[in-house]
Length: 607
Image (cartoon, rainbow, N blue to C red):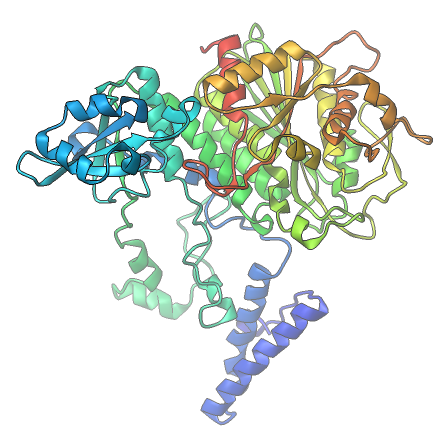
C-alpha cells in the first residue's frame, strides 16, 4: 500500500523483502494490540508507506537526492573558522622549539616561572600553554612547535583548533617573537583551516532511532542539479496547512530557527595574509575531502556529475556530459564497458568542464579517475579491500578540486577537465576476463583483470586530450597498490614521459609542503603489456605495477598517426590518510593537488 491508498511497488531482493515484511508485521502486531484489531487497514497504510520510503532511502542502490549536504556548498564553511581583528579575545604566540630560549627571555617573571614549573621546553613542546599576566591571572597562549622543520610552519597551527577553548578568537601575529611574514601568515592560516576540517555529514542523524524510517523525518538537502522552490509540496496534508494558517510553526521550521552551534575556536586573519589564496586552498581541500568521504550510495556517477555542474556554474565554466549508451555513439567505448553493469540511475558517464577562452593562453588538461565504487568486477575484491572503495573516485575529486583552485586563483590557462565517472559493478553484462575491448584511439585491450579498470576509463579520456593537444596534460588516479607499497600512503607517485616535469613538480611540492616523488617510466617494461590476441593487456601481473599502469596510460597520450609529443604527468596516489596527523585527519584527502597548483602558478602566472 502507498500514499492515498494507491498501490506502491518497490523491487526488492529476498533479504530486503524479508526485512520489509518483518517491519510491517511488527508494526501491525503493535497496532493490533493497542486497537484490538479495529481499523487495522487504515493504520497500516502509513506503516507500509514509511517502510517503502525507508528502504528506498537506506537500502536502494540509487539515492536520487544525493548527499544530505552538497560537498561544494559545504566547502564554504572554511570561512566560519576565521575572525576579524576586532573580534580577537586572546593572543597566541607560536614558537619554534629552536627559538624557545629567546622567547622566554621576553616574557614576564610570572610567565617564566610558570613555564619553568611545567618542566621547561622538554615538557611543553607540542602543547599550548596558558601564560599568566603580571598579576598572575591567565591571559595569553603560547604554542611550542615540535614539528620537523620541513613541515613546521604549515602544520604548526593545525592541531590547535581542537585543543584550544572554542570560546575565543585567537590573534596570532607573531612567530618566534617576530611579526609574521606574508608567507608565514599564509601558512599559519592555511594550517589552521586544515586543522578545523571534520566530516560530520552523517553524524547526529540517528537513522535507526525508534524506527527504520526515522531517517526520512529529516529531509535531505536538494541535489545541486535540482533547483529549490518556494512552492508548497503537493503532498502537504490539510492538517499541516491549517496549523500554518493558525500561526503554529511546523516542527521543522522551529528547528530551523534554532541558533547554530558555534563553529569552534577561530583564528583572527593575520594582517599580512592573502585571504583569497588561503580560502581557495582550504576550500578546494575541503571539497576534495568531502567528495571522497561521502558514501558511494550518495556519491555515484550522477552525484559526482551534479557537483561538477554546480562547480562550473559557480565559476562561469562550460559544462557537459556524455551518459550511458551515448558513450558508444560518441566513441568512449572503454568508459562504457567498465560502467555498463551498474544499475539504472548510476550509468557511466564522461564529465567535461571547460574554462578560459583566450586562445593565447596555454591549454591544460586535467583528467581524473572517477570510479565511484569499485567491487573489482568479476575479479571481485575481498571484503577488507572493498570496504574502502568509495575512495576510488579520489582522482576525479582531485581533478575537480584542482579546477576549483585554478579558477579561484585565476591562473592564466585554458582549462579542460575530463572525469570518467563509473561504477565497476558485478552483473551479467559486466566485462569479463578474456574480453577484448577497443578504445577511443583504436587500440585494443585484452582484459586480464577486471579489477584493473581505472586505466581503461582513463585511456578514453587521455585519448580525447591527445586529439586536441595541450601544453600540459595531468591525470590523477588511485590506480595501483604498487605505488603504496613503494611510497606509503602519504606520498603520490609521479610518472612522466619528461623527467624534468617530474623534477619541477617535486620542487613545487616541497615549497608548499605537499610532497610527491618520481618513479621511472621505464620503457623496456612495455614488453609486458603485449597480448597474444590484442594490442595491449590491461594487467600483466608482473612486478612494478605502478610503472606498468603508467606505461599503459602513456599509449593513449600519443596522437594516432604521430606528430605530437605530450607533456604528461601521471599522479598515482592513495586518496586517503591512513594515519591521522594535525591537519591531515583519517579519511579522504587531496594529495599532490597543491603541488600541481604551485607548479602551474609558477609556469603560467595569474591574470
